[in-house]
Length: 186
Image (tube, rainbow, N blue to C red; front, top):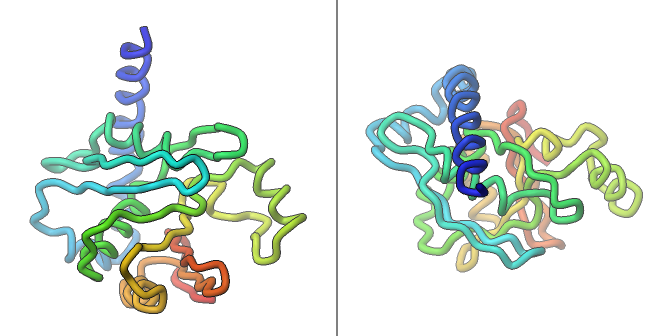
């Protein structure tokens, strides 16, 4: 029963992802297209620091998004406060894939925050500074990360060089924020 449900959800994700991913990648003006050209398979390794969960998943293979890989990534990047799962933007996953490659990383990303529900975002805004009212985390288009074994400034600089979205630098909290919004930095 659970396998059938997961397969069905995966088919929906694949269908919706295929309709959304191609136009979204084109909207980046080719910034990500070059580094991704010729790749047969794209995968990510992630560890959610709040839940301790890990995933190593292929999310794209032979020109298509991989439903099971996306479902596994979405589960690990869910709102850890509410348990709510939301699709993560394929362009964001591609940004992470390229960033990982640019810095020559061997380890996976540590995730501070992936998807955030509107309720969680509102609660965070009350207790933390720097939380946007209309955060892209609420759309699955932003992630806060660090990469063990890599200087945070180097990670930030590599993300900025991609010119593919927003990059925030939080040195005191030891993470960077990347998103698929307009190109900006803070």
